[in-house]
Image (cartoon, rainbow, N blue to C red; front, side, top):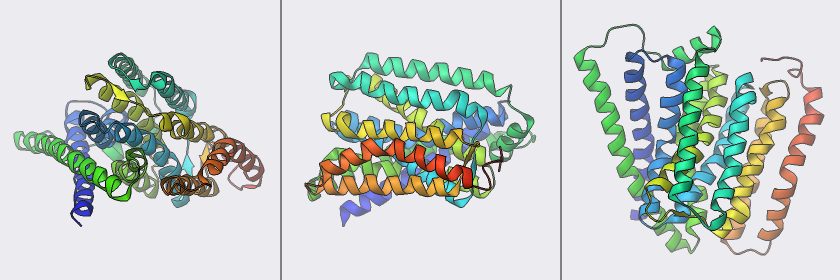
Length: 362
């Protein structure tokens, strides 16, 4: 009972902390003259990934390395298959041209770089420095590119993150700073309690910490992305719904893994199980986005359903593997070998039949 309470309170604090941090930091940034688009691409992206950063860093320092890596890998899988799938089922999602030209290749490249750096069994400080340097370069490029965005995109981000033209009073500054500080405190406490609770669950159920990191913790730390993307899709801000997921996946690898590796004295160990199956699954999920994103610049409802079906298959594998079922290795091969071909085939067949296929924007 106590373990369940620890997990739930940890998740609540992470979500509340991320919301508080994003709210305060967004208003402070906008008050300093930073455009809402840049706020959305940087401050909000960092903020929604802050639970992953807090949990992975805490787990690495306390010796639960499988949770640190499993959290990032599981979150990236969950972000695409569940969050994009659910958001697309709410309403078809628009895919911006810049996302296809720039952000999607960077997401794929970062995903491919992770197993390369982890082939020696850990993400070292040098690896962390490389990843974080790439994050800085990516962020600088985003800020420069934001000046070229269309008026429609600028207005969409202003509606979501803008604070208006009113002058900030000293009291308003203090309130925003309090949101930032309070958010950080909640993230620190939430990460500690969530990791402690997850480790106890792993011990009680006799399953690996990697599995807990890929499931319970991955879902818990991705709740801010769920809220941001689903609410954005309900509001019709469909560029934000997709961009939030892609940006979060990039930040999870470059910022979360990068900073965790950078600040952990002995580096972050990467298990054989993660390298053999879960990281390849993450890469397959990212690559499976390509045929969906490239057809008509729309993620349609049936494609969202396909993503959700993939996530259920992945969860089925994790459950079977956790139970030691003999069927798990066979499901491994099916998931790894069929995800991209099935996605491409489904897109080829159904896209031609869709009434939206001829539209560039829904």
